[in-house]
Amino acid sequence: MRLSLLALLALATPSFGAEKPNIVVILADDLGTGDVQRLNPYGWIPTPNLDRLANEGCAFTDAHSPSAVCSPTRYGLMTGRYAWRSKLKSGVLGGLSPRLIEPNRLTLAQLLKDNGYHTACVGKWHLGMDWQLKPGKSVTELNIEPREQVFNVEYDQPIKNGPNSVGFEYFFGISASLDMVPYTFIENDKVTANPTEDRDLTMFAGKPTRTRKGPAAPGFTAEGVLPELTTRAVGYIAERAKEKKPFFLYLPLTTPHTPVAPAKEWAGKSGLNAYADFVMQTDAAVGTVLAALKKHGFEDNTLVVFTSDNGCSPQADFPALLKAGHNPNHVYRGNKADVYEGGHRVPFLVRWLGVVKPSTQSKALACLTDVFATCAEAIGAKLPDSAAEDSVSLLPALGLSKSPTRDGVVVHSVNGSFGVREGKWKLCLCPDSGGWSDPRPGKAPSGAPAVQLFDLDADIGEKTNLQDKHPEVVTRLTKRLEKWVADGRSTPGQPQSNTAPVTIRKK
Ligand SMILES: [Ca+2]
Image (tube, rainbow, N blue to C red; front, side):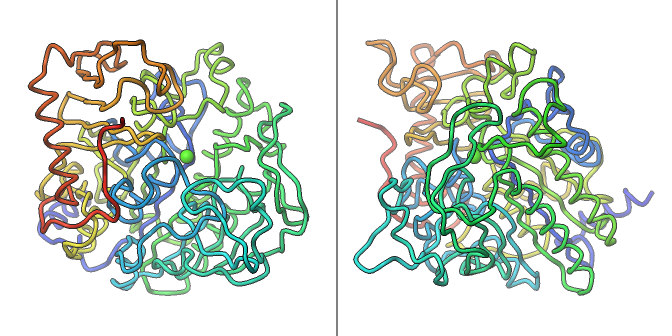
C-alpha cells in the first residue's frame, strides 16, 4: 500500500513529495557488467551487496558509459554532455592534467548544491586539476604525463580548479587512476601527505608488473585506498546525519581497476584470481556504504545509483577468468576501450526504496550522462539549455514520470571512434574495435568496410556486419549523429557550441 501511494505521489509531483532525496552515485572503475552476479547467470564472482541493490531497485540491462574509458565517461556523468564535445577527443587525462570541465559549465554537483544539497566527492577524480607547477615547468594537458614530468609539480602547494571548483563542497580522494602518479591522497585542495618518495606500486597481486613510477607519499599503498575511501564515505554519511540538509555523495571507487590489490582478508576468496577477489572486496565496500545509510536513517530517502565507468579491462586476466567459466564482459564483444559493447555496456542499478519498484529490470536505453537529468527531474529542477545537452531523465523508464525518453545513444572508444545506437541497430564508424580488442585500429583486414552495422537483437555478440545489407540504416544513423554533433546537443533545446571541433570519421 505504501508503495502504490508513494508511486502515485511521484506521478503527481515533480519532486516526489516534500523532501528532496539524498543522492549517492557509486561509480566502480573497470567493473564489467558480467561481474555483477545478478546481471550474469554465468557469473562466478559472488556480489551479494550489488545483487541486493538490484533486488531492492531496478537494474538497467541496456546501459552504457558514454565512453569506453575513464576520463570521458566521468566528464559525461558530471556534465550530462558527451566528452567528445570537449577538448578531449581520445584517451584519458593523467594525474597531473589540468581541469577538463570548462569554466562556467553547470555540473551535477553544482546543480544539486544550488538546490540546497551538501555535496561531496570521495574517490578517484580523473577529470584534471591545476597543480602548482615549478618555475618554467609544464605538464601534459590531455594525456597521461610522461615520466620526465612527474616531479614538475610543487606538491605541497594548494591545487586550483579541482573538484571544489565544480560544485563539490568536500573532496577526498586521488587525482586520477590509482596506477597514475601522484600516489597520495588529496583532501579538498591539498595533498594529505607530501609525495616525497619516488616509487611504483604492484600492478596485479602475485605478478611482477608495476605501475608508473613517480612521487609517492610515505606509507601510501594500493591496498589501503579502497578501505580508506570507504571509511571516508561512511564518515561523511555519519556527519550528514547531524544536519537537515539533503546530500549528494559521488563515490567514484578506484576499484577493481589496476592496481589489482585486494586486502589480505580478501586474497584468495573468490577461488578465481586476484581480480575476482578485488571485485568481491569492491562489492563489500558498497555493502558498507549501504549499511551506513541504513544506520543513519537515510535508507528510505536516498536515491542510490551504482554503475561502472567502462567495461572490464584485459588487466583482469581474461584467460584465467574464462578458464574458470567467468566472463566479466558477459556475452558482449570486446572489452574496455572498445567501441564494441564490451567497452561500454555497464551495470546500472537504481535503488530508491518506496519509490522505485523493487526487483525490476529495465530494457530502456540508458547512458551515464542521464544521471544528471534524472537527478534534476527527481528534485524538480529545470535545466538551462546550456547544460546537460546529452542527458535524458530515466524517471520514465522507472515508471515515475512521462517525460521524453532516450531513443538513441552515442558511444566513443579510446581512439575516438564513434558508435551510434538506435533501437536494435548499432553503427560503428570504424572498421575495427577502436580500442584494445581485435581487430585493433589499423589491423582490420584490407578491404574491410569503413563502418560496421550490427543488429543487436539478433546478434548481441556483434559478429555479422550488415552495412552492405542495410545501407539506409547506415545513412540514417550517420545523419542522426551528424545532427547531434552540429547541434551541440542530442536533446531538445537551443543548439549549443561544441568546445572544440568534432570529427566523426577518422582518416
Ligand atoms: Ca575505468
